[in-house]
Length: 179
Image 1 (cartoon, rainbow, N blue to C red):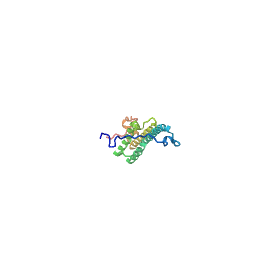
Image 2 (tube, one colour):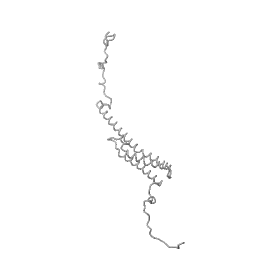
Image 3 (spheres, rainbow, N blue to C red):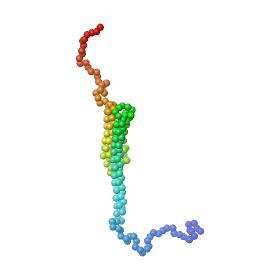
């Protein structure tokens, strides 16, 4: 026996898919209403356009969610500041420092925060403005807390050390000398 030949002789290991029957083929059956074979390529381009539009819509929605995230932090920080009270101690100073530092670091990285959502079809100006406004609100909350703790120099008595001594306007003397 030769290699590649079985006991039955030469075998044909390919399948012939040509239709040699006399029955009507699928080409003879009309297409159902609403279906045209010529629009198949157009459907692919429409699907890809719809997919790109859906992706742009998703990116826009996620950008707005990221822009609104500082609001949750703002509420939490406000509650923590209220719980810390108005006395100067380690806990209140730490919370106030955190309230100032977190928005400042977030404002420094605005471009990096919105980088994943950059697209020609997505307008990021609105989400970025909201993000900046909410973080500035967080910084204002921290400055307000510094003021309530008395750590901001807002009164004239806070600047007394830098004032020159008052000049004597009048001098009074007299009385009885006691020796």
